[in-house]
Image (cartoon, rainbow, N blue to C red; front, side, top):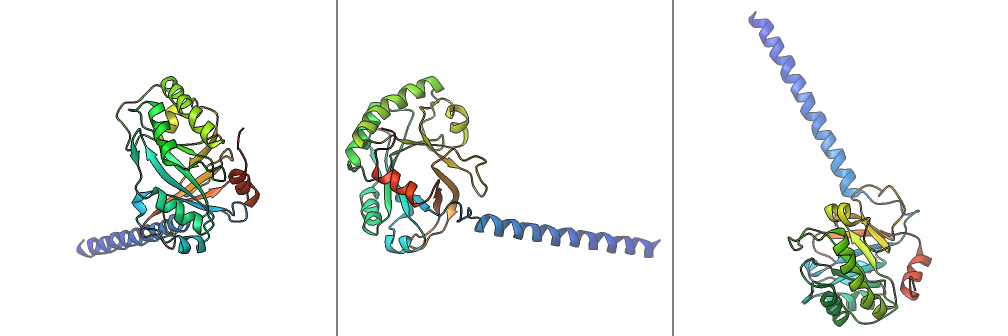
Length: 245
């Protein structure tokens, strides 16, 4: 009986060891996949980043040399907040030839017209820029959750002066619960989608954020990575024409 118990224990330990090894191998494969995922460059050749003050001081020459063609930079939030790195980031990106655009984080606790005024007062009027972006998400936002109808009315009030000022229709970025609640009711505009390490499953978007912990030369730490729907001609269209007007 004692010998049988020892053999059973050895088989048990061996089986446990096999499971541990297989589990570690699966984790390693998964880690390599998620850390190295990149959309097919033959399909999506134009790469870009979105940045804010969180990225610190950026070496834009190194960024541009690392296969980055465009940058969308945080400008404002709510009715009075301005990203302190906005002008520096825009100037640096433009200096090295990147296509640039600005985005506004839309809050639920300030009137839309105040937010539009903040964005317009901060972002230079340059129609060679990419279309302005409106970022709508729950993380970091006010606790109040407007109804879809309320938000739709506020966004319309925001878009009217902003789009008239820039001469281009805006792009909407919605993620998570905000996408679930408001995605079907926000004004009809181009979309920036977020689908980490996998294809969004459709092509109804202009930007696809595929990594929120990417690495780019010239930036210390993580940065959001994106691709553009279309090639160089699409990028030129967005930067040179009055999109949607």
